[in-house]
Image (cartoon, rainbow, N blue to C red; front, side, top):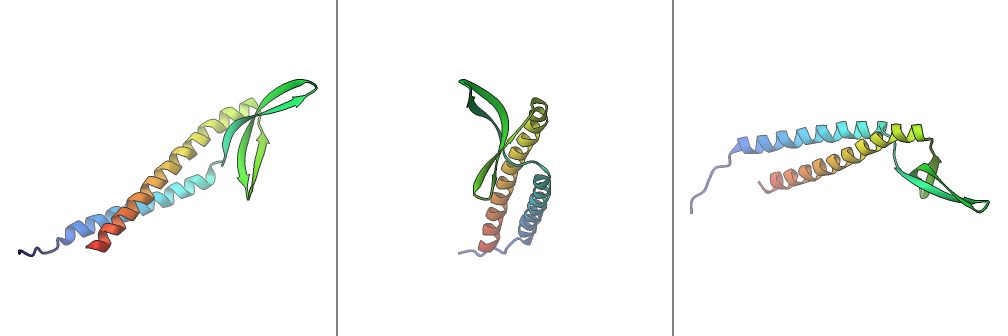
Amino acid sequence: MRLCKKDESVYRMLEAERDRCRLVVEKIDRELTALPKGSLGQRKVKSGGKEYCYPCLRYRSGARVMFDHLSAEKVQVLAPLLEKRKKLASDMKANKRRIATIDALLRRG
């Protein structure tokens, strides 16, 4: 059986990648705090025999779901911000998974 020496450069490369991913997670976290939470939806209200639909922002406040009524102009402003938040949250999740994988590899070595 032949024993191989550990190649420390591989471990340094993994540690550098883990550090880079941690910096990315911190940056994404700062950006997420500046973006609005929630999702766009429509509320339906029946009044006087008629049904009215209007846009709203749905979000959680503790255990309750809150609804903020929005104007059409506000919807146009919020829609791209909410999409950006969704993409950043997805990127953050992928980076956290990458960090966990690299940590597991470093522990084995």
